[in-house]
Image 1 (tube, rainbow over the protein chains, first blue to last red):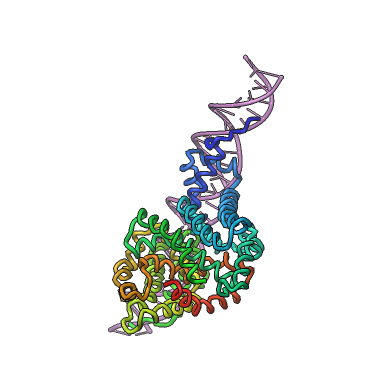
Image 2: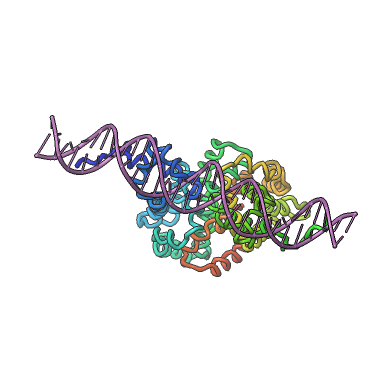
Length: 203
Length: 203
DNA sequence: TCAGTTTTTAATCATTTGATTAAATATTAT
DNA sequence: ATAATATTTAATCAAATGATTAAAAACTGA
Protein backbone atom coordinates (compact mmCIF):
# COMPACT_ATOMS: atom_id res chain seq x y z
CA UNK A 1 0.00 0.00 0.00
CA UNK A 2 2.67 2.42 1.10
CA UNK A 3 3.48 4.37 -2.04
CA UNK A 4 6.92 5.89 -2.00
CA UNK A 5 6.64 9.60 -1.43
CA UNK A 6 10.35 10.19 -1.83
CA UNK A 7 12.02 11.97 -4.67
CA UNK A 8 13.78 8.68 -5.19
CA UNK A 9 10.84 6.67 -6.39
CA UNK A 10 11.38 5.61 -9.96
CA UNK A 11 8.36 7.51 -11.15
CA UNK A 12 9.57 10.74 -9.58
CA UNK A 13 13.10 10.24 -10.85
CA UNK A 14 11.77 10.00 -14.39
CA UNK A 15 9.52 12.99 -14.00
CA UNK A 16 12.30 15.12 -12.59
CA UNK A 17 14.67 14.10 -15.35
CA UNK A 18 12.01 14.77 -17.96
CA UNK A 19 11.37 18.22 -16.52
CA UNK A 20 15.05 19.08 -16.76
CA UNK A 21 15.61 17.77 -20.28
CA UNK A 22 12.33 18.95 -21.81
CA UNK A 23 12.70 22.45 -20.38
CA UNK A 24 16.29 22.59 -21.57
CA UNK A 25 15.92 21.26 -25.09
CA UNK A 26 12.24 21.27 -25.97
CA UNK A 27 10.05 18.37 -27.05
CA UNK A 28 11.48 17.69 -30.49
CA UNK A 29 15.14 17.80 -29.52
CA UNK A 30 14.63 15.54 -26.51
CA UNK A 31 15.34 11.80 -26.85
CA UNK A 32 13.62 9.44 -24.47
CA UNK A 33 17.07 7.93 -23.99
CA UNK A 34 18.32 11.31 -22.72
CA UNK A 35 15.63 11.28 -20.08
CA UNK A 36 16.36 7.69 -19.10
CA UNK A 37 20.04 8.45 -18.75
CA UNK A 38 19.42 11.64 -16.73
CA UNK A 39 17.11 9.66 -14.46
CA UNK A 40 19.50 6.73 -14.21
CA UNK A 41 16.86 4.22 -15.19
CA UNK A 42 16.21 1.67 -17.90
CA UNK A 43 14.62 3.14 -20.99
CA UNK A 44 11.64 0.79 -20.84
CA UNK A 45 10.62 2.16 -17.46
CA UNK A 46 9.71 5.44 -19.08
CA UNK A 47 7.04 3.70 -21.10
CA UNK A 48 6.09 1.49 -18.18
CA UNK A 49 5.26 4.48 -15.99
CA UNK A 50 4.20 7.09 -18.49
CA UNK A 51 3.07 5.15 -21.53
CA UNK A 52 4.73 7.43 -24.11
CA UNK A 53 7.06 10.37 -24.61
CA UNK A 54 4.09 12.52 -25.49
CA UNK A 55 2.12 11.74 -22.34
CA UNK A 56 5.16 12.47 -20.20
CA UNK A 57 5.66 15.73 -22.04
CA UNK A 58 2.06 16.76 -21.55
CA UNK A 59 2.45 16.17 -17.86
CA UNK A 60 5.53 18.36 -17.62
CA UNK A 61 4.06 21.07 -19.82
CA UNK A 62 0.80 21.24 -17.87
CA UNK A 63 2.72 21.49 -14.65
CA UNK A 64 5.02 24.18 -16.06
CA UNK A 65 2.15 26.23 -17.41
CA UNK A 66 0.24 26.03 -14.18
CA UNK A 67 3.27 27.00 -12.13
CA UNK A 68 3.89 29.95 -14.38
CA UNK A 69 0.36 31.30 -14.20
CA UNK A 70 -0.22 30.32 -10.62
CA UNK A 71 2.54 32.58 -9.43
CA UNK A 72 1.17 35.46 -11.46
CA UNK A 73 -2.31 34.86 -10.14
CA UNK A 74 -1.24 34.71 -6.52
CA UNK A 75 -0.24 38.37 -6.78
CA UNK A 76 -2.81 39.50 -9.33
CA UNK A 77 -5.78 38.26 -7.34
CA UNK A 78 -4.65 39.18 -3.86
CA UNK A 79 -7.32 41.55 -2.51
CA UNK A 80 -5.15 42.58 0.44
CA UNK A 81 -2.56 44.50 -1.57
CA UNK A 82 -2.97 47.85 -3.29
CA UNK A 83 -2.34 48.60 -6.94
CA UNK A 84 0.96 50.24 -6.13
CA UNK A 85 2.05 47.33 -3.97
CA UNK A 86 1.29 44.93 -6.77
CA UNK A 87 3.49 46.93 -9.10
CA UNK A 88 6.29 46.16 -6.67
CA UNK A 89 5.34 42.59 -5.93
CA UNK A 90 4.99 41.34 -9.47
CA UNK A 91 8.57 41.95 -10.61
CA UNK A 92 9.95 40.83 -7.28
CA UNK A 93 7.93 37.65 -7.24
CA UNK A 94 8.67 36.85 -10.86
CA UNK A 95 12.35 37.61 -10.89
CA UNK A 96 12.90 35.42 -7.86
CA UNK A 97 10.98 32.59 -9.45
CA UNK A 98 12.71 32.90 -12.81
CA UNK A 99 16.15 33.17 -11.30
CA UNK A 100 15.56 29.73 -9.79
CA UNK A 101 13.99 28.36 -12.93
CA UNK A 102 15.25 30.39 -15.88
CA UNK A 103 14.34 27.96 -18.64
CA UNK A 104 10.60 27.91 -18.12
CA UNK A 105 9.59 30.95 -20.19
CA UNK A 106 11.51 30.06 -23.33
CA UNK A 107 10.35 26.46 -22.92
CA UNK A 108 6.71 27.44 -22.71
CA UNK A 109 6.88 30.06 -25.42
CA UNK A 110 8.72 27.94 -27.92
CA UNK A 111 6.38 24.99 -27.46
CA UNK A 112 3.41 27.30 -27.52
CA UNK A 113 3.96 28.12 -31.19
CA UNK A 114 3.21 24.52 -32.16
CA UNK A 115 -0.21 24.08 -30.61
CA UNK A 116 -1.28 27.41 -29.16
CA UNK A 117 -5.01 26.81 -28.69
CA UNK A 118 -4.60 23.49 -26.92
CA UNK A 119 -2.00 24.73 -24.47
CA UNK A 120 -3.54 28.10 -23.75
CA UNK A 121 -6.70 26.36 -22.64
CA UNK A 122 -4.75 24.49 -20.00
CA UNK A 123 -3.85 27.73 -18.29
CA UNK A 124 -7.38 28.98 -17.92
CA UNK A 125 -5.63 32.30 -18.34
CA UNK A 126 -8.25 34.12 -20.33
CA UNK A 127 -10.80 35.14 -17.77
CA UNK A 128 -8.32 34.92 -14.95
CA UNK A 129 -6.39 37.85 -16.38
CA UNK A 130 -9.11 40.09 -17.70
CA UNK A 131 -11.18 39.76 -14.55
CA UNK A 132 -8.32 39.83 -12.09
CA UNK A 133 -8.31 42.16 -9.13
CA UNK A 134 -5.16 43.82 -10.41
CA UNK A 135 -6.82 44.82 -13.67
CA UNK A 136 -9.81 46.14 -11.74
CA UNK A 137 -7.48 48.17 -9.58
CA UNK A 138 -5.69 49.49 -12.64
CA UNK A 139 -8.97 50.70 -14.07
CA UNK A 140 -9.96 52.28 -10.78
CA UNK A 141 -6.68 54.18 -10.70
CA UNK A 142 -7.25 55.38 -14.24
CA UNK A 143 -10.77 56.54 -13.42
CA UNK A 144 -9.49 58.38 -10.36
CA UNK A 145 -6.93 60.08 -12.63
CA UNK A 146 -4.10 58.80 -10.54
CA UNK A 147 -2.81 56.83 -13.52
CA UNK A 148 -2.73 57.78 -17.19
CA UNK A 149 -5.09 55.79 -19.40
CA UNK A 150 -3.55 52.56 -20.69
CA UNK A 151 -5.07 49.41 -22.09
CA UNK A 152 -4.65 46.46 -19.74
CA UNK A 153 -2.97 44.45 -22.48
CA UNK A 154 -0.39 47.14 -23.12
CA UNK A 155 0.28 47.28 -19.45
CA UNK A 156 0.69 43.54 -19.31
CA UNK A 157 3.02 43.44 -22.30
CA UNK A 158 5.18 46.08 -20.65
CA UNK A 159 5.26 44.27 -17.36
CA UNK A 160 6.03 40.87 -18.81
CA UNK A 161 8.37 42.35 -21.37
CA UNK A 162 10.45 44.05 -18.73
CA UNK A 163 10.53 41.14 -16.29
CA UNK A 164 10.33 37.98 -18.37
CA UNK A 165 12.03 38.97 -21.60
CA UNK A 166 15.54 39.21 -20.16
CA UNK A 167 15.29 35.56 -19.13
CA UNK A 168 14.00 34.54 -22.55
CA UNK A 169 16.81 36.43 -24.21
CA UNK A 170 19.45 35.52 -21.63
CA UNK A 171 22.19 34.39 -24.04
CA UNK A 172 21.62 37.39 -26.28
CA UNK A 173 21.73 39.84 -23.37
CA UNK A 174 24.93 38.29 -22.11
CA UNK A 175 26.34 38.55 -25.61
CA UNK A 176 25.27 42.16 -26.12
CA UNK A 177 26.57 43.30 -22.78
CA UNK A 178 29.62 41.05 -22.72
CA UNK A 179 28.77 39.79 -19.24
CA UNK A 180 28.64 36.38 -17.55
CA UNK A 181 25.80 34.61 -15.76
CA UNK A 182 26.65 36.05 -12.35
CA UNK A 183 26.58 39.59 -13.67
CA UNK A 184 23.33 38.84 -15.45
CA UNK A 185 21.77 37.71 -12.20
CA UNK A 186 22.97 40.85 -10.46
CA UNK A 187 21.25 42.95 -13.08
CA UNK A 188 18.06 40.97 -12.52
CA UNK A 189 18.23 41.67 -8.81
CA UNK A 190 18.56 45.36 -9.56
CA UNK A 191 15.52 45.18 -11.78
CA UNK A 192 13.33 44.04 -8.90
CA UNK A 193 13.44 47.59 -7.54
CA UNK A 194 14.01 49.43 -10.82
CA UNK A 195 11.01 48.11 -12.73
CA UNK A 196 8.49 49.46 -10.21
CA UNK A 197 10.22 52.84 -10.35
CA UNK A 198 10.08 52.91 -14.13
CA UNK A 199 6.45 51.87 -14.09
CA UNK A 200 5.41 54.56 -11.68
CA UNK A 201 7.10 57.12 -13.90
CA UNK A 202 5.26 55.77 -16.90
CA UNK A 203 1.83 55.82 -15.31
CA UNK B 1 27.51 30.69 -67.13
CA UNK B 2 24.28 32.55 -66.64
CA UNK B 3 23.21 31.59 -63.12
CA UNK B 4 19.50 31.91 -62.52
CA UNK B 5 18.79 34.92 -60.37
CA UNK B 6 15.11 34.18 -60.09
CA UNK B 7 13.31 33.08 -56.99
CA UNK B 8 12.43 30.03 -58.97
CA UNK B 9 15.88 28.52 -59.19
CA UNK B 10 15.95 25.21 -57.37
CA UNK B 11 18.53 26.45 -54.93
CA UNK B 12 16.44 29.48 -54.01
CA UNK B 13 13.27 27.42 -53.75
CA UNK B 14 14.94 25.18 -51.22
CA UNK B 15 16.37 28.07 -49.25
CA UNK B 16 13.04 29.85 -49.11
CA UNK B 17 11.26 26.71 -48.00
CA UNK B 18 13.92 26.04 -45.39
CA UNK B 19 13.58 29.56 -44.04
CA UNK B 20 9.85 29.13 -43.63
CA UNK B 21 9.96 25.71 -42.00
CA UNK B 22 12.99 26.25 -39.79
CA UNK B 23 11.68 29.57 -38.49
CA UNK B 24 8.29 28.03 -37.85
CA UNK B 25 9.29 24.80 -36.15
CA UNK B 26 12.94 25.08 -35.17
CA UNK B 27 15.82 22.84 -36.15
CA UNK B 28 14.94 19.68 -34.25
CA UNK B 29 11.28 19.56 -35.23
CA UNK B 30 12.01 20.15 -38.90
CA UNK B 31 12.25 17.16 -41.24
CA UNK B 32 14.24 17.54 -44.42
CA UNK B 33 11.21 16.00 -46.09
CA UNK B 34 9.08 18.91 -44.86
CA UNK B 35 11.43 21.31 -46.55
CA UNK B 36 11.49 19.30 -49.78
CA UNK B 37 7.70 19.21 -49.84
CA UNK B 38 7.37 22.92 -49.12
CA UNK B 39 9.85 23.65 -51.89
CA UNK B 40 8.19 21.20 -54.27
CA UNK B 41 11.44 19.43 -55.02
CA UNK B 42 12.91 15.98 -54.71
CA UNK B 43 14.42 15.25 -51.31
CA UNK B 44 17.84 14.41 -52.75
CA UNK B 45 18.17 17.91 -54.18
CA UNK B 46 18.44 19.31 -50.70
CA UNK B 47 21.62 17.36 -50.17
CA UNK B 48 22.78 18.00 -53.71
CA UNK B 49 22.68 21.76 -53.20
CA UNK B 50 23.32 22.15 -49.50
CA UNK B 51 25.14 18.98 -48.49
CA UNK B 52 23.25 18.46 -45.22
CA UNK B 53 20.36 19.64 -43.08
CA UNK B 54 22.81 21.22 -40.68
CA UNK B 55 24.61 23.27 -43.34
CA UNK B 56 21.30 24.51 -44.69
CA UNK B 57 20.22 25.41 -41.19
CA UNK B 58 23.43 27.31 -40.50
CA UNK B 59 22.83 29.32 -43.63
CA UNK B 60 19.32 30.27 -42.60
CA UNK B 61 20.32 31.02 -39.04
CA UNK B 62 23.25 33.21 -40.02
CA UNK B 63 21.03 35.12 -42.39
CA UNK B 64 18.30 35.51 -39.73
CA UNK B 65 20.73 36.68 -37.09
CA UNK B 66 22.33 39.17 -39.40
CA UNK B 67 18.98 40.52 -40.51
CA UNK B 68 17.91 40.91 -36.92
CA UNK B 69 20.99 42.79 -35.82
CA UNK B 70 21.45 44.67 -39.05
CA UNK B 71 18.14 46.42 -38.63
CA UNK B 72 18.99 47.37 -35.07
CA UNK B 73 22.38 48.66 -36.11
CA UNK B 74 21.05 50.76 -38.94
CA UNK B 75 19.25 52.88 -36.36
CA UNK B 76 21.73 52.53 -33.50
CA UNK B 77 24.68 53.72 -35.51
CA UNK B 78 23.08 56.48 -37.51
CA UNK B 79 24.97 59.66 -36.64
CA UNK B 80 22.37 61.88 -38.26
CA UNK B 81 19.58 61.25 -35.74
CA UNK B 82 19.40 62.49 -32.18
CA UNK B 83 18.94 60.37 -29.08
CA UNK B 84 15.30 61.31 -28.87
CA UNK B 85 14.72 60.51 -32.50
CA UNK B 86 16.27 57.11 -32.05
CA UNK B 87 13.89 56.39 -29.19
CA UNK B 88 11.15 56.88 -31.73
CA UNK B 89 12.82 55.12 -34.63
CA UNK B 90 13.77 51.92 -32.86
CA UNK B 91 10.26 50.75 -31.94
CA UNK B 92 8.87 51.92 -35.25
CA UNK B 93 11.55 50.18 -37.25
CA UNK B 94 11.37 46.99 -35.25
CA UNK B 95 7.63 46.66 -35.03
CA UNK B 96 7.32 47.08 -38.78
CA UNK B 97 9.96 44.47 -39.38
CA UNK B 98 8.54 41.99 -36.89
CA UNK B 99 5.01 42.42 -38.12
CA UNK B 100 6.22 41.19 -41.49
CA UNK B 101 8.35 38.46 -40.01
CA UNK B 102 6.95 37.58 -36.62
CA UNK B 103 8.64 34.22 -36.16
CA UNK B 104 12.23 35.39 -36.23
CA UNK B 105 12.70 36.35 -32.57
CA UNK B 106 11.34 33.13 -31.07
CA UNK B 107 13.26 31.19 -33.70
CA UNK B 108 16.55 32.86 -32.85
CA UNK B 109 16.04 32.80 -29.11
CA UNK B 110 14.96 29.19 -28.91
CA UNK B 111 17.87 28.00 -31.02
CA UNK B 112 20.22 30.25 -29.14
CA UNK B 113 19.82 28.19 -25.98
CA UNK B 114 21.46 25.22 -27.66
CA UNK B 115 24.75 26.76 -28.75
CA UNK B 116 24.89 30.31 -27.44
CA UNK B 117 28.61 31.05 -27.85
CA UNK B 118 28.79 29.85 -31.43
CA UNK B 119 25.76 31.79 -32.60
CA UNK B 120 26.41 34.99 -30.68
CA UNK B 121 29.76 35.26 -32.39
CA UNK B 122 28.05 35.29 -35.75
CA UNK B 123 26.25 38.50 -34.90
CA UNK B 124 29.36 40.44 -33.99
CA UNK B 125 26.93 42.05 -31.57
CA UNK B 126 29.26 42.55 -28.66
CA UNK B 127 31.24 45.60 -29.58
CA UNK B 128 28.63 46.79 -32.01
CA UNK B 129 26.22 47.40 -29.16
CA UNK B 130 28.43 48.70 -26.41
CA UNK B 131 30.24 51.09 -28.75
CA UNK B 132 27.22 52.17 -30.75
CA UNK B 133 26.41 55.79 -31.32
CA UNK B 134 23.10 55.34 -29.57
CA UNK B 135 24.77 54.20 -26.36
CA UNK B 136 27.18 57.11 -26.58
CA UNK B 137 24.27 59.47 -26.99
CA UNK B 138 22.51 57.89 -24.04
CA UNK B 139 25.54 58.52 -21.87
CA UNK B 140 25.82 62.08 -23.08
CA UNK B 141 22.20 62.70 -22.17
CA UNK B 142 22.81 61.25 -18.74
CA UNK B 143 25.87 63.44 -18.20
CA UNK B 144 23.91 66.48 -19.31
CA UNK B 145 21.26 65.52 -16.73
CA UNK B 146 18.61 65.40 -19.39
CA UNK B 147 18.12 61.70 -18.68
CA UNK B 148 18.14 59.87 -15.36
CA UNK B 149 21.10 57.53 -14.90
CA UNK B 150 20.48 54.06 -16.29
CA UNK B 151 22.83 51.26 -17.27
CA UNK B 152 22.87 50.70 -21.04
CA UNK B 153 21.95 47.05 -20.57
CA UNK B 154 18.91 47.90 -18.49
CA UNK B 155 17.87 50.35 -21.14
CA UNK B 156 18.33 47.72 -23.82
CA UNK B 157 16.36 45.10 -21.92
CA UNK B 158 13.51 47.56 -21.52
CA UNK B 159 13.56 48.54 -25.17
CA UNK B 160 13.73 44.99 -26.50
CA UNK B 161 11.36 43.74 -23.83
CA UNK B 162 8.70 46.24 -24.79
CA UNK B 163 9.07 45.85 -28.55
CA UNK B 164 10.19 42.29 -29.16
CA UNK B 165 8.62 40.39 -26.31
CA UNK B 166 5.02 40.73 -27.52
CA UNK B 167 6.02 38.94 -30.71
CA UNK B 168 7.82 36.22 -28.81
CA UNK B 169 4.81 35.75 -26.58
CA UNK B 170 2.24 36.25 -29.31
CA UNK B 171 0.07 33.19 -28.58
CA UNK B 172 0.13 33.90 -24.87
CA UNK B 173 -0.81 37.55 -25.33
CA UNK B 174 -3.66 36.59 -27.60
CA UNK B 175 -4.77 34.06 -25.02
CA UNK B 176 -4.54 36.45 -22.09
CA UNK B 177 -6.36 39.24 -23.88
CA UNK B 178 -8.80 37.00 -25.72
CA UNK B 179 -8.00 38.70 -29.03
CA UNK B 180 -7.24 37.52 -32.55
CA UNK B 181 -4.25 38.16 -34.80
CA UNK B 182 -5.74 41.29 -36.37
CA UNK B 183 -6.36 42.86 -32.99
CA UNK B 184 -2.88 41.87 -31.92
CA UNK B 185 -1.40 43.67 -34.90
CA UNK B 186 -3.44 46.76 -34.14
CA UNK B 187 -2.02 46.83 -30.65
CA UNK B 188 1.46 46.56 -32.10
CA UNK B 189 0.81 49.53 -34.35
CA UNK B 190 -0.31 51.52 -31.32
CA UNK B 191 2.88 50.59 -29.56
CA UNK B 192 4.99 52.25 -32.21
CA UNK B 193 3.95 55.63 -30.80
CA UNK B 194 3.29 54.55 -27.22
CA UNK B 195 6.66 53.01 -26.45
CA UNK B 196 8.56 56.26 -27.11
CA UNK B 197 6.12 58.11 -24.87
CA UNK B 198 6.59 55.61 -22.07
CA UNK B 199 10.33 55.77 -22.48
CA UNK B 200 10.50 59.51 -22.31
CA UNK B 201 8.47 59.41 -19.10
CA UNK B 202 10.85 56.85 -17.68
CA UNK B 203 14.02 58.74 -18.49
C1' DT C 1 8.25 -20.01 2.93
C1' DC C 2 6.07 -19.29 -1.18
C1' DA C 3 2.60 -18.02 -4.55
C1' DG C 4 1.24 -13.82 -6.57
C1' DT C 5 2.26 -9.28 -7.91
C1' DT C 6 5.02 -5.40 -9.20
C1' DT C 7 9.18 -3.57 -10.96
C1' DT C 8 13.31 -3.86 -13.73
C1' DT C 9 16.24 -5.42 -17.44
C1' DA C 10 18.18 -6.74 -21.99
C1' DA C 11 16.95 -7.60 -26.41
C1' DT C 12 14.41 -6.50 -30.23
C1' DC C 13 10.91 -4.18 -33.40
C1' DA C 14 9.04 -0.97 -36.60
C1' DT C 15 9.20 3.54 -38.12
C1' DT C 16 11.29 7.73 -39.07
C1' DT C 17 14.81 10.30 -40.90
C1' DG C 18 19.14 12.21 -42.91
C1' DA C 19 21.82 10.87 -46.51
C1' DT C 20 23.58 8.32 -50.71
C1' DT C 21 23.58 6.04 -55.17
C1' DA C 22 22.92 4.99 -59.82
C1' DA C 23 20.26 5.85 -63.55
C1' DA C 24 17.52 9.22 -66.25
C1' DT C 25 16.81 13.72 -67.99
C1' DA C 26 18.06 18.36 -69.17
C1' DT C 27 21.47 21.78 -70.29
C1' DT C 28 25.68 23.62 -72.22
C1' DA C 29 29.70 24.17 -75.07
C1' DT C 30 31.96 22.98 -79.27
C1' DA D 1 24.52 17.23 -83.64
C1' DT D 2 27.13 15.43 -80.08
C1' DA D 3 29.82 14.83 -76.23
C1' DA D 4 30.41 16.61 -71.76
C1' DT D 5 28.38 18.45 -67.78
C1' DA D 6 24.79 19.61 -64.59
C1' DT D 7 20.39 18.59 -62.62
C1' DT D 8 16.67 15.62 -61.21
C1' DT D 9 14.52 11.32 -59.90
C1' DA D 10 13.33 6.87 -57.65
C1' DA D 11 15.11 3.56 -54.85
C1' DT D 12 17.61 2.41 -51.07
C1' DC D 13 20.77 2.62 -46.88
C1' DA D 14 22.19 3.05 -42.21
C1' DA D 15 21.50 5.11 -37.99
C1' DA D 16 18.48 6.97 -34.62
C1' DT D 17 14.50 6.61 -32.02
C1' DG D 18 9.99 5.57 -29.67
C1' DA D 19 8.02 1.59 -28.19
C1' DT D 20 7.25 -3.42 -26.98
C1' DT D 21 8.22 -8.00 -25.24
C1' DA D 22 9.53 -11.78 -22.52
C1' DA D 23 12.19 -13.05 -18.94
C1' DA D 24 14.50 -11.90 -14.54
C1' DA D 25 14.48 -9.75 -10.12
C1' DA D 26 12.40 -7.61 -6.24
C1' DC D 27 8.71 -7.12 -3.36
C1' DT D 28 4.21 -8.30 -0.85
C1' DG D 29 0.91 -10.65 1.87
C1' DA D 30 -0.62 -15.03 3.77
